[in-house]
Amino acid sequence: MAVVFGGRSSEHGISVVTAGAVLRAIDRTKYDVLPIGITKDGRWALTADEPERMAIADRRQPSVEQLAESGEGGVILPVDPSNREVVYSEPGSVPKALGEVDVVFPMLHGPYGEDGTLQGLLELSGVPYVGAGVLASAVGQDKEYMKRVFTSFGLPVGPYVVIRPREWELDEAGARRRIVDFAGEHGWPLFVKPARAGSSIGITKVDDLGGLDEAIATAQQHDPKIIVEALLRGREIECGVLEFEDGPRASVPAEIPPVQSHEFYDFEAKYIDSAPGIVPAPLTDEQTAEVQRLAVAAFDAASCEGLVRADFFLTEDGDFVINEINTMPGFTPISMYPRMWQESGVSYPELVDRLVQAALRRSTGLR
Image (cartoon, rainbow, N blue to C red; front, side, top):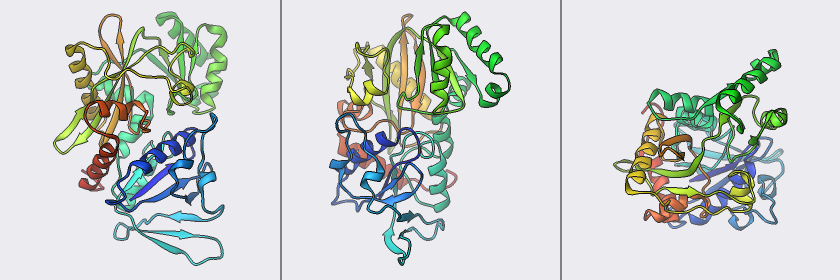
């Protein structure tokens, strides 16, 4: 089994942290493991199998560059479905076969890995992999099309407006006016986000017109397409979905309480300051059943496989509104997805094993 992590997105460091946790949890009596890190510039590197070096230390994130066994060597995945042998090559040296890979556990977050690109490569190679396929990964990465899919299936979503890069380039004033009109209809504050990023990176809460341009610029550092969402007043509720032999099931839900030192549940609150979530969420039996139903419905609507974390708002009116899904959620033992399943009776090592076994049960290609 190959564990692939790192990557070219702004979530590189969190991917390394996640992979470290998975490497610690994999049953080495059951699986032979090949760690493969993708550097920030896109090189596939053979890395040390040393999970203890893959953690946040002194508020700094680890990187593949720190773990790579060589500064020049590269790992080459097969592109022939009849051959699953992985090869390692260094300049001036004879390529070395590393063995056949039966399944890949892709621990990448964000573009160039979680968005269907890596999944497409693995489909071409004929190698099974953990998690969502090409379509579901792409839908789960793009907040605009995710919401469009949910709406088409009758799932409740909040108000939003999207500004595409061409629109911004051709008529910046007109694009800004669309956002201001949106604020006039739904009120301030607004949340300005990169449309295709995760881990709450690049998100700004904008309280008035004065902070809008800076928020747009921050989001565009991560994605030229941005999405602007109205504030939904209520409680933040999350629910995990896991593929079992008989289909997807939902975990107990969790609640993300307000973090006093942060305006919202941003990157630092999630990963640096480790904001605690409440598991299980203090909901009524009826509310729990409803959010679990909606989480599985979102999983099915986007044609997901393996796992999903579905994020909701429970509004002041008592209605659930789906904010987004994450097809490869944060996966350290203290992350919300594993914590929800731990509370549901599935330990972290068992969770990892179930995901690998679900991948091995599936074929690549159309299914």
